[in-house]
Image 1 (tube, rainbow, N blue to C red):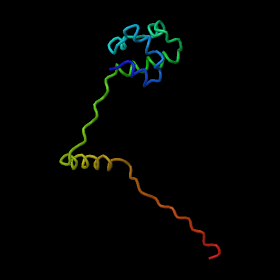
Image 2: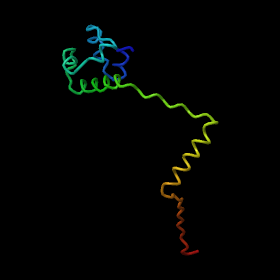
Image 3: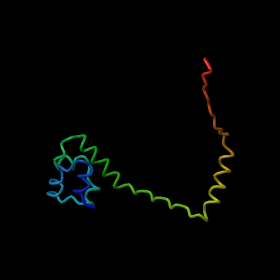
Length: 104
């Protein structure tokens, strides 16, 4: 991961030089805390919080995108869905018509 590009995505590219001068790479980035960011020259509390949230998001493993079921799997999935819908409350479509018959 390119730390400069990551900072640019966050709108905090002004800190790129400080990160480069202190050899902050993707591995070290995950270990940074509030004090480290302050020592790097990130004086704004808001910017430190934004960076810490983004670092936490990098550290959290992203869930895999579920695969789209193939056509062969679809009938069994819809059959299960129909069973679950039947156990819930009925939903019915309602149409409302307003008609002004005065003067006709």
